[in-house]
Length: 623
Image (cartoon, rainbow, N blue to C red; front, side):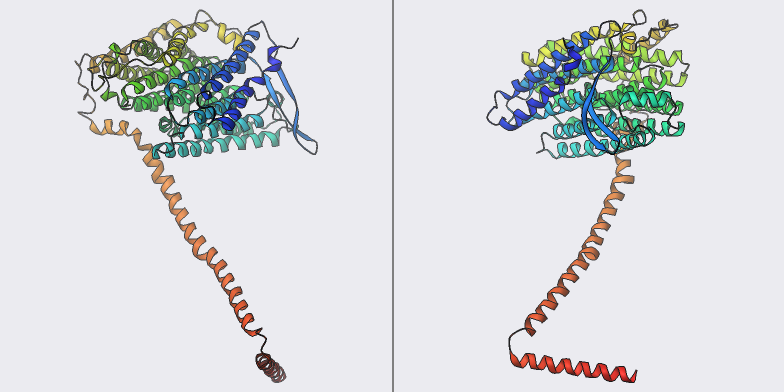
């Protein structure tokens, strides 16, 4: 009897078929379109769940199929296939579950949109690409799906292409992630060159590293280049500025991209190639410090934003920084992947909750909301659970996974990184408290017509809220099941874990308390920072002017260079072409006048020819 792992190739196939069907028959299936997407994703989730349950058994063997020979050059054969292990079995469940809930939610949120079938088709394509990334058997195959994820994000972010902001955001996301993708491509080429067998499957890469077949400095460069690819997809500094702008897409897409799919791809890539990073201490430090800097940078920016989706977007950037920090300082992938696991649920919950709010009040500015707790009870309670989970308050899931990261920094005596993690946790709790108190408990402001969203939107919120509450218990200082199952290694005793838990909880509670005193109780002035230091508030509100800096040092010089090249092309290249064409045309005109069939013209030309010949002979004689 075949195992479920042997038919796991069907998991990405279901959404691919849905995409093809919706693109072929979408206009005729306007009412059925959403159901096609939902059913396909449901099939992927059920099979993913069966694969995951199958792998819960003791020491389940990895399954690899790579019998498809895609390309053969000489003795080098490039194969395609799929691989199932504990890491990607977990990712299959996360991606398919969140995608399923987003599809169900979108049926209500996108109701009435003229291009609703196109929307569900794009979502299916995006889901297919991400599931392909997860089960890819080698790096080249992963890269192909990786690029397809970029295409899907471009289509979804720019779905409302009639809005100039959406078009600009889609182009920005596509171009900035391509910068990172170039790093990943170069890393793949280096591995292909230095691995004697030229095999790019993960087993061959592991063996090459174990046998030290790749020079140490090349390993470092490969790891850093792979991380550059992850920086692009996961919105790490300095390629993070596309991710908040991606909020111009429909809100369900914000949840899909920011929770468990595109941005998680970078973290998954580092975890999938963790052998390479472990072989280079320099690369591990790069991952840790870039992640830590991104976490604190985005957390401070989130404090001063007023758009509910952008606050959550910068929160995503910050939490992804936490994940990278964990991967850079740990000997295993447990802490980083554990936070990815919990974050997928509570961040999807928060984005879909934000969509429910926007659906009700038709604004994204938190200062134009207020008092929604009385009118949107389900959204309020589920959003509160997501807020507490993100803020790292026990016993919600985000507390356990964030605590695991802080413990890794504490246990490894990375005191600077530990301090950054605590400060970022404080800011996270503060800006989420600010958001929650202003939107749900503050004074009503223009929300008189607000009402609860339909059940097709609230049911996914409830499911995600349950997961945001309970998912963290799979890995605690008292229960190391998640890490043991994921990595196959026993969890060591957590000395000092209690102290870390207390300190991290205090940081989160202080952030919430400060938010309460400033935005609900009003005992602390909201101008506590902007009053004495307005420049600092303006600096943070304008995202440290990084977009303006990039525009000044990259965009404008490139545009100037482009203008110069256009002038060169128009006056030099095109000028030569036009001159050549004019010369040929002139010769043709002269020839047409000469070859006119008149005898006297031919006689005159003959006489001129004889005269020229005679002059040439005379000149040659004297010379």
